[in-house]
Image (tube, rainbow, N blue to C red; front, side, top):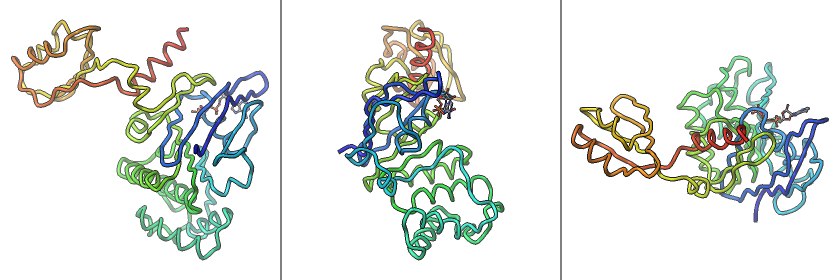
Length: 300
Ligand SMILES: Nc1ncnc2c1ncn2[C@@H]1O[C@H](COP(=O)(O)OP(=O)(O)OP(=O)(O)O)[C@@H](O)[C@H]1O
């Protein structure tokens, strides 16, 4: 049973088409990435998903029935434009957010404390929001989205502005929630995060879905024509005829092979000149697929 099912939703603002005929499904216990360049239509789609705006046409089903406002108690939404009451004490603010989602004050407080502990911001609980760093404020927002234990979690750029340690802490938290059976959608430009976390994606460009499916389906459309190599010694093999282009880092290279080239020939040549620690044939990264797909659409 999909937790979210959009069927050909469209929305225009005056003459501007924000999104056209978008269909997607998000199942419980999965993480879904909604991707696209600036202005592609991601936020417009999310807004329609949770009734902030209505589609001009198409249907939105949540938890296996047509959208209605009472379902919002099962949704946690972290918008891109985040707002906290700057002068309010953090714990009071979290309790208020919990109450707005139907929790009793006492329950909200217990859960808020447990979350602050888990996300390592217990010290912040009794401070005013304006005394916190941006990253800490983001964690508070993150908690406020989750306090009422929603079955559907929607996050617009949830890791933006976080240092790697905190980004990883929130990523692990989302992975845990996924394991518990929550459906999670996040919107981002960061392909590396999507690649690591998402089971399925939809790439929107200029209001239309241009690539969609499970990560495996999306990648299986592309040849394994990349080689990752870790080496020490001579680097002449980078000039081998099988190599179309390469990026070289300290002791590593990422090589794009020519169409039809034999990776084994390259391996032989590399092994004659250098000590090879790793030689792996890989599919293009999601970032490359994204750039290729969007680039082709722009050319068309
Ligand atoms: N309320 C509105 N009034 C008029 N145009 C709008 C409105 N909301 C969105 N748009 C337009 O619809 C298009 C899609 O915008 P949207 O905010 O959904 O994109 P996005 O993919 O979320 O972009 P970003 O990554 O920059 O946040 C844009 O051209 C935007 O200017």
